[in-house]
Length: 421
Ligand SMILES: [Zn+2]
Image (tube, rainbow, N blue to C red; front, side, top):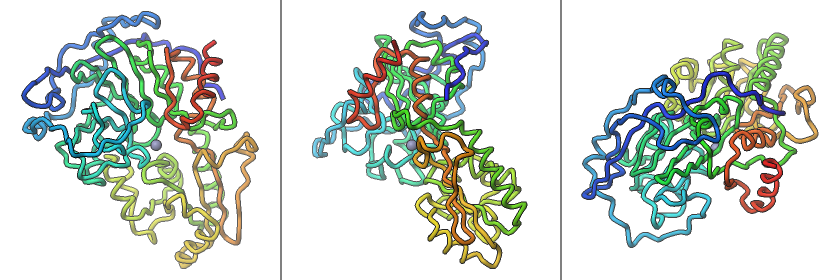
């Protein structure tokens, strides 16, 4: 599947507003940076399209956050000489800076004082907990989750605004939507020497991203790329097509048998669009475990909160952990609610269930046993192979650093070269 390749008609622009950090030698300057200044791009990245002055002032998002007072009072973090230093792999470091991305399982990293977190999935925040005492930069939603679910002291958690450049000791950082899970972001770093680095975190590339002024107006020197599905066998349909398919199958099932319990698999965070679409289309409430409810309350989504409940009996959509979506476990689940439901229809939305055998949604074969039916649907929150190729061709970065399946880096580099020639 190819993404739309036609460039958007609206004129490109880059940064609308910038914030700077003035170095403070007495305390950590990391804690002292929310000071707005006029935002004119420092570097003319003319190999794409030059920003127009008129573009720079429009859509200027005012920072909605307040100055983090707790951080102001914090003294500089001393180097913890007794802490064991683990080896942080190079692909988690931003070269030429004291910054790392998604690197929390290496203890106190030598030379790192700014820890960036792309999103709240455990393979990215492992190692983060209430003991962590370094500044963590992330989106507002991820900050909520880090504080509430991991117990990290709020003085160390620094939510950054979306699409608003922030300058941190000379390094300009902009958060862009990664289209992965709620709160997930890509980090765009512009270093003092003008080098531009994009770290995608986990992401699903989309045609929308080609309209981001921050990406259209910059040459990316280094791209840290989520290469989870860097294999041609992973060729997913668009998310909206999968959602439409799921809604259609569920609607037909409920029309035939109104007492059908709909189940949707989920991770701690992820797949929300699928069960939200089901709830809206069918007019059903969503039953969630208390733990999942607590997670969703961090997403600041009033619509979700209004239709979610931990009283499963009152809901016709049950959201369950992905690991519970087997015929045996769902049969037991249906038995538990047999006073209300006669059958169960489950959707397992993950890219891993998709293979080259099923090229089309129509080819999906559900598993069925007694009153339980399971559809494995190719709803991926990572880019397909074709989307990765299109994204790389759009950006034409100077260098690509794979962040997933890194043992195959040499092989991937060969493919990147092919894509760019
Ligand atoms: Zn993830």
